[in-house]
Structures are given as C-alpha cells and as structure tokens.
Image (tube, rainbow, N blue to C red; front, top):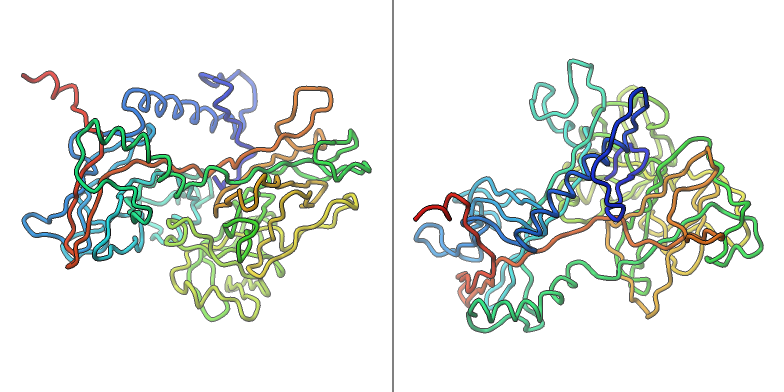
Amino acid sequence: MKGDFSRDSFDALRHYSRVLQQQGRVELDADGNERESIHLHLLRTLAADLIGPFGGPGTGFQLLDKDGTTALQKNFLIGKGHYYVDGWLCENDGDVFYSAHDNGPSQPWLPAPLELENGKNYLAYLDVWERHVSAAEVDGGLDAASPGGMREVALGGPDTTTRAQVVWQVKVSPDDRGLLPATPLTAAQWAAWMDANWATWRSMWQPPLRGRLNARATTTDPDAGNPCVVSPQSRYRGLENQLYRIEIHQGGTVGSTPPPTFVWSRENGSVVSAVEHVGAGSLRLTAGWRDTRFALSVGDIVELLDDDSVLKGAPGPLVRVTGVDLDDLTVTFEAGSPAPAVIGSRVTALRRWDHGRRKPTGGAANDDRPVIAKDLALTLTEGRWLTIEDGISIFFDAAALPDEHEYRPGDYWLIPARTAIGDILWPRTADVQRLPLSQPPHGVEHHYAPLAIVTVNATGAVTVVVEPTQRFKSLVELSQP
C-alpha cells in the first residue's frame, strides 16, 4: 500500500478483535486502518473456513469453450458470478472472454494475456491480489465532473483517502512439465492430483523463498559488520517521522543477468503525480504539488507508471529528472531515457523514489551505499549492510544455497522511523540485546485457485477438459425440494 501512512500497525498474530476509541484522544491513520484490517481479516478468515481454499456459488467463473453454439478458437469465456479464493471475494460482473474478442469484452484486469498455442495443454487458474490506488492514479484520467473520482470537488479537490481494489486475473500456465492428467478425472482422483501437484504449480507463480530483510539504525560500534550485533548508540537522525519503503524493482536471483535491484522511499512511495501528456524526453503533469515534501526537483529518480505494467506486476521504467517547469507543469528527463519510447502515451502517473537525492550520512565504515544499477534502481546485494540515509541501514539475508532467493518485482518491506526514540520500529528478539529480526516481504501476496484444464488442438479449437472448481448451492437452493 503506497499511501501517505504513518505505519501499518495491523498484525494478525496479535489476534486483536477490535479497535476501541477513547474520548479526548487523537486518532491516527494507523488506528482507523487497523480497524478496517481487523474486520476484513475476520470476514476473509470466516469465508475461508466455511468454503475452503477456493469455491463459489452457481456457475461463477465457469470456463466455457463455446460462445453460444460457436466453438472458440484460442479463447474461452469466463462466466459471470462470484468465486472465493482463500476467503477473498472475486466478482465477475458479466460474461467476458479470456482475451480480446469481437463478440464481447475481455477480462478487465489482465491486459495482453498469454496467447494460447496450437497443440498445447494449459492449467487455467485465478490469480487474486490487492491493488492500491491513489487519487492521482484514478482521477488523472477522469473528467472533473465524473462521479468515479476520489477527490471531492466541493472541497477544492484535496487529496484525502486512497483505495484498495481486489484484482482477479484468469491466467493460463502451459504444461511444460507434464503435470496435467491426460484424461478427465473423478472427484476423488482430482483431489489426489491436487494434493500431489498443486503446491508445485503455485511455486511457479509465487516463489516460496522471496528473500528476507533486516533493518537497523546505523551504529558506530566496531562490530557493525555483524548483523547480530546492535549498539546502544544506534540512532535514527532524521528530522521527521517517516515510513520508509524498500521495494524490489527488477526481479530475479542474485546470480541472474541482470541482477535484482531495489528502490526506496522515505514517504512509502506515496509521492505520485498524475500525467496529462508524454512527449519526447518530457511529460506534462495534470497538477502541481501542495508543499515541498511532495515536490519534484532536478536529480530525482522517478518511475513512469501505466495501468498495463501495474496489472502485469512489472515495474515501470526509471528516469532521472533534469528539469521542472512549474509554470506549464513540464518535467524533462535525462538524455537517452527509454520511458517515452517504451510506454508512450499509456503513462498515467509518475512516482518519486528517494535514492536519487539521498542525503549524506555518517554511518560506520562497514556500511556501504548500494550501487545505482543500469536501470537507475539500486543493485541488491545479499549478506552485507547497505546504508540508506539518516542512520538507517538494511541487510538482505544471504541465501543458504546459490540463487535460492527469488526476488519478485513489487515485493516490499516497511520501516517506520521515529524521531522521539531516534530509532526505527522493527521486530527484535525478546532478550536484553534486542537484536533485529529478519522479515519476509510484507507484500504483495497473491492467492491462487485452479479453474480448468484447457487443451488447444492442432487447428486452434479450445476444449475445457475438466473443471477442478468447487461449487456449492445457496441456502435458498438447499431448502428447495
């Protein structure tokens, strides 16, 4: 969630049942957001306990290989209705095609899905995740009079709240390993196949070992190179409370080419500006900024965003700002920037990352600044403390085996920094040493459910061989004789 938040205080392991507001007290954004997270956790857990890992009523998300009586070529229909994955509700408002088709709309949140090939078998599945959107991203492409806007024009259009959106995508994965059964299965046989193979399929889409991050306030102790030692002299030296975000930009393993990279923001990646037009080496914003905290300046590194890239889980290209003209809201880029040529007019917003204008720091000699990579992100190095700014350092755990950690674009960690204690809020051991503990990514979590086995013959005709979904009847249906 790339919003302007103080922190994300929800922790399912604490098992809080509600947030109680006291009279005369200040309520923070974290309190209200935690209240919503507690309720949502309850609802989704209840749905998962009652329904199981996946299931739905009626024919929601049923895959069909015919459009009426016409057999489909390299395409299939996704039925209208509801389906639950790990308790997350997926809503399909109308029958849609897997990919673009002349007879109707295609699925809303998967641009350019994988093209089906002749003579291949696929497992069709649901990929469900939560997308965060701000007013800059939503309202930038809307007319000011649109009822779908987040900003309230009666108040002058201030940036108030943001939204979380459940995204479902029907995807296909080719059976390159020969895991799919050759013939239709009975219910019992299908259950046995799921027990034996489903974990293997899921690991292809969301690697189980996505790396772990540790964080601390920089120490001047001579043992600073040891991730298990934290000095009592540790100190966060920032002048303001911040919510730092460490996010994977280029995915992969440390041995891959190119290697994985990351970016960071002291504002949780919330500095976003809507884009009106993209030209050759420049773009024009739809509006300026209200204070210098969210301003752009020469030397900043910004990410150019478009809906297609976001929905594909791919990072946008990074460019360095070389000029900002507030009179006509024009931002120019460093010569040779690839972004306009790559995504052109599809750019809807830009996001500022703060490693482009990081401030000096007096960290220990053992602490090193991460190196800026060719993509203008920072090279990810495992097993070594990396200095961010104002005394904050991070440490990517070294893998036990070469290339064991698979870093995925968009995975992130949040580090709240507080001036009152001169330190960061980070999980630590319970002993007197209070050593920081490495953490898995805080998100983004994807949830998966199988939908069907789809075969494509030599002429491109699609056949839905078996539907491995779970179906249940409503209480009204069950009560009918």
